[in-house]
Image (tube, rainbow, N blue to C red; front, side, top):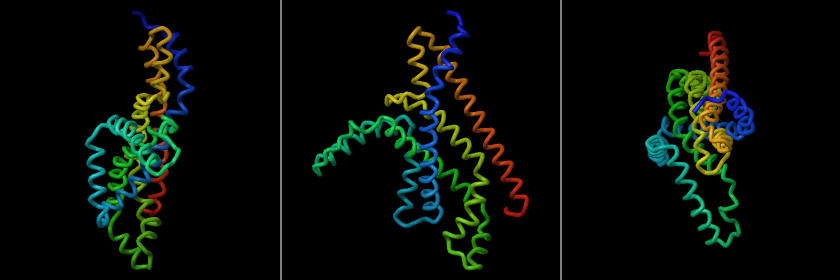
Length: 236
């Protein structure tokens, strides 16, 4: 068996068409996960009655089980729930009409939410409690204090961890092929099946993921640098 450099380039070109799907899965899961994570982090910090134990259990369960397991549970379990409810209420909708990528969106968002909650919570805890008390002293409500004072500083402190979470979700998006979503990895398998050059095809996929990871790291570094310059002006 010999390495075929020419096919690496051929595979690389053919894999480009799968980049939008991979980026879409990553973007949706990160955005929804951040929203879920922020809500969960606030519930845990302020120990909201009833919701607090639910939030703790959610984070513990999701972080304690594999991401692929979440995807398969939703892939096989959600259709049963949807079809059962639709049949009970006489609705004509059936789970078979749900696009496969939606299962990935839902599963990855739930998973990202648990991990993002810890990132957001750690950022919120960095902000000195005295700043919130100072906000109360000038008449701000808790939502105003969070929005104007706490969140900007918490996000600034969380940039490196948020970047790691984005990279993690980018790499985890490869699991979507298990539910027939054609992402970069799935496309690499399809390309390689024409001549069984799987090594070259997956090497091309690795190059693409590496390139996107570098771009995310560079963007995070620039963002962190700008935030630090702003904070030295007296914000933090």
